[in-house]
Length: 183
Image 1 (cartoon, rainbow, N blue to C red):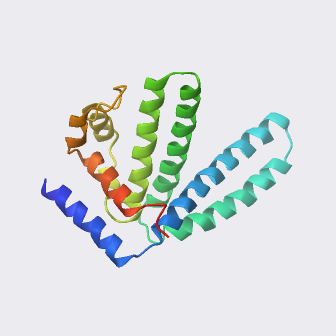
Image 2 (image 1 turned 45 degrees about the vertical axis):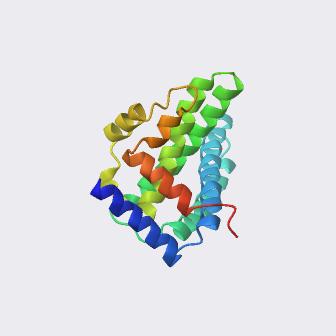
């Protein structure tokens, strides 16, 4: 519990110091997700059509994505840059698959995908705001936490609000720190 309280204090400190324009950076992170998707689509289009012009476009989009990512990821060590890029990419893909499941009427599957997508997204921010370390990103922990959070239930119950898991704290702290409606 001390680690969670320490984590919440770090979030509050980041908010008070206003080190980042979190509202704009949240928008930018969504833009970066889309740039990653464009890179993927250009790769597949180049291979499906055999036209090299799509590789040239991919390279241009990649350069833009790198510039934009540098606006959010200012300091990093080890593989945090790549981890961050893949957290955003995975979050976007799970969101898209969740949306497709939702349109097919598969609410349970969609909800699970959306929850995991958001979990990865908050992990991106936790990592890049210095609130969590790369070693804290553990697949087993994520799966265990997902089971604890009962992401597969159709509806949230009032007692679900009382859950105190690490990723629940990260999610709540993230939501407190980043409010796209703040000007």
